[in-house]
Amino acid sequence: MARYREAVCRLCRREGVKLFLKGQRCLTDKCAIEKRNFAPGQHGKSRRPKPLGYGLQLREKQKVRRLYGILENQFRSYYEKAASRKGITGENLLFLLERRLDNTVYRLGFAPSRASARQLVRHSHVLVNGRKVNIPSFQVAPGQEIALKEASRQLASVQRSLDLTGGRGVPPWLALDRENLKARVVSLPKREDVNFPIQEQMIVELYSK
Image 1 (cartoon, rainbow, N blue to C red):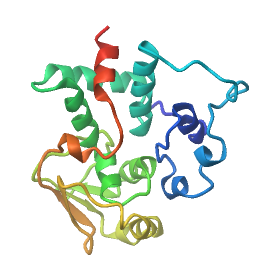
Image 2 (cartoon, one colour):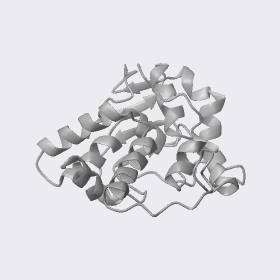
Image 3 (cartoon, rainbow, N blue to C red):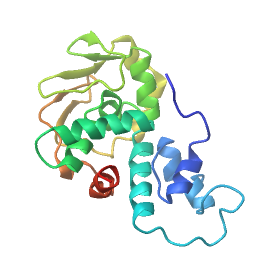
């Protein structure tokens, strides 16, 4: 399966915003944005014209795609699914991304970043309704229980993540049982549950051309 293998900090620098791709490191002075808040590459420091129209739409799409760690073909597939459903296409797109299993694990605080959450899922540490699911793109649904395997609950990385992300907060569409490291999906996510500045209408306009 294809995946991005280069340095992820350059993605934040390219978009000019913290995407929290390295978890807690992004909250320290080691963050690339804090050190070098300009685009990567030889000409990154040179003054570039502010993007307009298509450029703004493209940057918004790239920002969201990189935030959730998805490659272009899969992201377009999510957009097509969102467009085929009833409701507002941009919001439908965000709901599909939020309901990914790797994002759900991240939002519960079991992992410090979406990349780490994807690894937990891939390595079969996560159960859905008591059954192993190792597909990061699996769509969770209301009523389902998300839990870590018994042996996985003692992983140092999980415990460290819970300690570090305890104050991050769990979105209202998830109910976390922190003591037993399990949670229940109580509803579908709402637009206000996406706590990152996203202008999804720009993405819709980009793909509608």
